[in-house]
Image: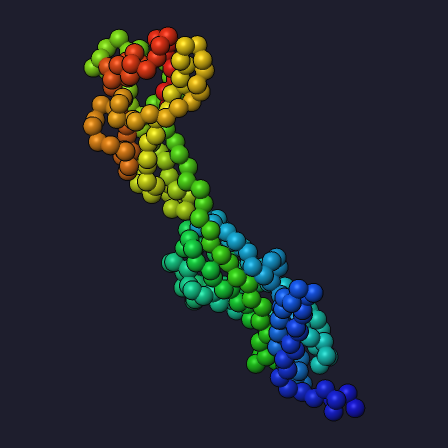
Length: 248
């Protein structure tokens, strides 16, 4: 009989593949054959997905009750979600027992891989709880650089005048509420240079040559004050035509 050939119990199926250059790949599937009515369950989408800390993650389970015991396929289902490690500020008792699991933004940590598992059962076999699993990898998002005080024409007539470039509105999307100081600022200076009517193009120069302050590198400095006098001196020193280059 079929049951004698394929009795109830736990099974493992191992698949080994080898290509013509000797590469080997192995996959294993574990399953249980039972006399109980077992519902089917899956989580929509890819089994491994990526996201960023600032995005909301929505996981949706799809389940169907077994009809092998005479129960209708529309039998009421019970869902339970578990995620490991636990997201920041989220507790297991807060996770609703529904088909959908919503992970709020800024609760997942960049660089972490989370495993979310949903288990399902229905009334006729509450002890049987098949499950489905997905992994969620949290990748870093690109920072947003914003500079206030640029893109303008200025006069260099007054040596004491200071032009302020302010990067305080820059932020990392991985940190909630666009927190100031969530990024490290490094200023770099460039100019459009011509020598003897030959267009050299955009070339870098040391920001301390035009800055009011003497600290170098400007690493972590949110604001860069530019001295009109030092800017004019740099222009006269390096411009043969005395045309005003563009500084950025």
